[in-house]
Image (cartoon, rainbow, N blue to C red; front, side, top):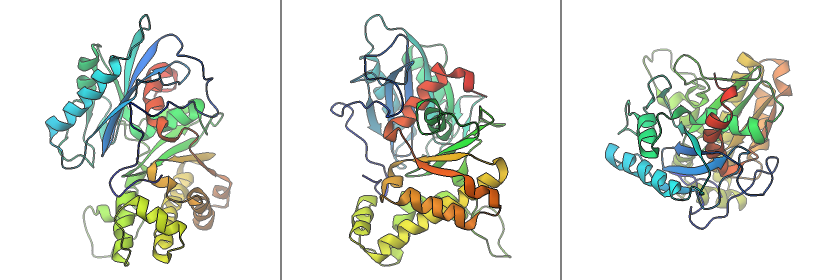
Length: 340
């Protein structure tokens, strides 16, 4: 199911079966040391225990809502609760070797703080310290959520074997992470790969200053594209309703889906011009808004590519579905060799 106007659907942490990545590890029990994985986004926080073969420990996955209207204390409490619930499932005799945290950005990897665009109450919030303290660890490793998704896809997902690639999420927001010549790219502050903040529309000649309405995220993400469809006369208000209307052939819904995919394709083409990507894996709730969404993105990349070489990039669907952020956060511990 696609994301709603405000959130991607997610399984109930107490009843949904844990899934093994299709191209990843086997389905036997957890192996050896475990990492605590935490993923913080604009609508929810999740935590789980993940082993060194990228498998979620059954029953360890828990979630709680966040939301743009939540206070700082409410968000922090949600993070603490899912960590507490997850740690109660730590199998006897399995050591907890660290905590990896993926968060919507901007972040400061150096200081362990986050200022997510979709969580106004958190500005410079010490998320890494909160997670480490709650888990009883000396420190937690914090990285951008897009980089975590890329790490997961490169580790056991759709980008295995690639040396230069990008992972993307299209959901409440639009995020990304970069792999260049076999290494994850963090950048000066830890925010490299923040493709959702690329400006893809031309501003009026007399405009000045920052205009977030021109960014890829504010064109292509679930909430913004549903809002655009409503301005065209669409009667629904959620991503699910947009998806259903699109399947039924509603012309406004299909135009909205194509508009989102086109914008994502333009963003990818721009990224390719800089780093000559081999492949891009797209996940996130809104990327499931239609069966042909990724195909539409691929077509857009090929159509707008400013260089003929860009048409060789492969745009593929995530192989890890909604587990990618948690697997990637755990990869900050289990695959620390890939970190910048």
